[in-house]
Image (cartoon, rainbow, N blue to C red; front, side):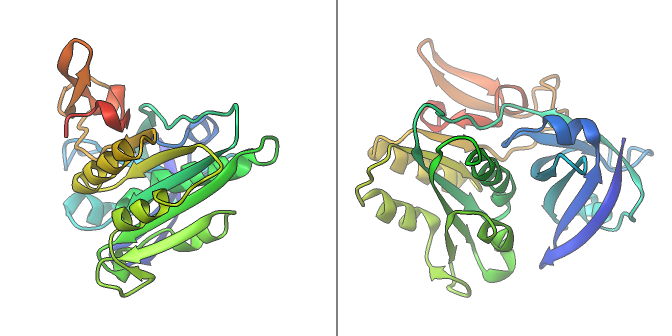
Length: 264
């Protein structure tokens, strides 16, 4: 069980909820998620997955970011400070990166896909205290300004931040994939790595661009994960292996995958 510390509306129907959960806060890694049960009466019945957004290990807290757009998330947004919530985590395979040399780390976020990438940017930022990390570039996009989240938090880190909206209501008008292509067309003295989270069409486009430019790319897939522990097989995705195509569990074998191995 975890106790709600604060709940804050940060955009239209978007909320950040902070929990006091020492075990999760101390062990969570960027890209992992938690499974939350709405209430003790099991209505709604199933748990829902939420990416870990921010972690404060000294305060033993972590937060999630979500859109209130259904009975589960709308009800969750109305939970009061101090309420106890059943949470399992941290779960899943996190992002990984080469620490042997500085790199140009390019993070591509689409809408509510920003949380795990903020956690990744924060982790890379903190690594600078004892290791040369290189550059951190964040491409943060959404359909419109009201759905663009994490900008203030990203701006507080030592990152190169690009904000994009489809309709031009904030930052550049266009898609994150357009900006990504422009960025990769420019030469870099550092080897590059890509990390992405967002809607599946965006991830597919990012994966194709990464393949075109021969840049390693990890994606965090967004899919329903009813159990989160690999038991129900309700979150399978198609993955290409040397033995052919196999279906793997996003919650157990992911949610972070090498983009080049997925069958889009």
